[in-house]
Length: 393
Image (cartoon, rainbow, N blue to C red):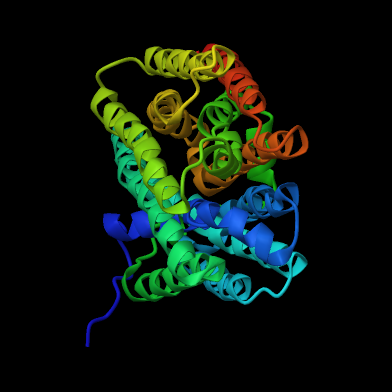
């Protein structure tokens, strides 16, 4: 009988699956939103709450998982989170009403965010500096393929079996990941490195750090503002550009190619180009892409090609900036890696939720609303990251 390893680095493929669960919870069900709204007899704005509140749940849960895992270890905390993700996923697939669905999605997000926090923390447990940046960039690169493929499965699941199938697939993914984690995951946060401080102390110290605040806010503005587009995209692609749910899934795959290309570029640049130059260039790319998206709408040339091209470039900028901002943020205090990963992730998800709230409340599915949010976020990210670099110096 094979026994799970008790110490050492976690298998990289398992880290990808663990980290991807939380984001899969958003991407896989996006093609199902219009059909879900019709089936449950609610508006587009109401059904978008399943995305907005999911992001808020991801943010809130990460604040707790990080410091708890710093004290008690990554493995037991992660197993509890994945179990909640799986059970709540089953509840979403059986939801008889929008209220039931929204509540189950909140619980699902609280469980799924364990993987987001602890997957990144386990990478940083075993690596430092440029090596950590390279591994986080590789994690971003590989993980971006999951959200790229997920909407394709989601779109076909809706077309063949109805909207409940997309939510059911998530429950199955959670169950498989939970089983693999219980079997193969070692504990990466060794007892000698665990903090005895208050669970809140590390987060409070991080929040007081100008460098951490700048990297966290700048990273959030660059890497999660595209959630504004993701929340509105089913209505842009299906209602405005007249695409089928199956084709929408394929278009998401093209968008995620941009994120993967960004992760690959970041992996190649780590250790070769100064971090501040990479962050500045990545944000400038995002600014130009968001401006191009708005320009396509303003000049009347908005179509599938211009949408995918501009948003894909925006996501490439996000993919480049993400590992550099993340590594810098969670390296501010080496004794509170879990707390830093959790707080960083919470800021990301809260900002992403804010972007989806703006899109949902201010003309849902509106192209100019999405464009303004993305452009403004990229500019704010540039300012925040520049301030973080100055503070770290």
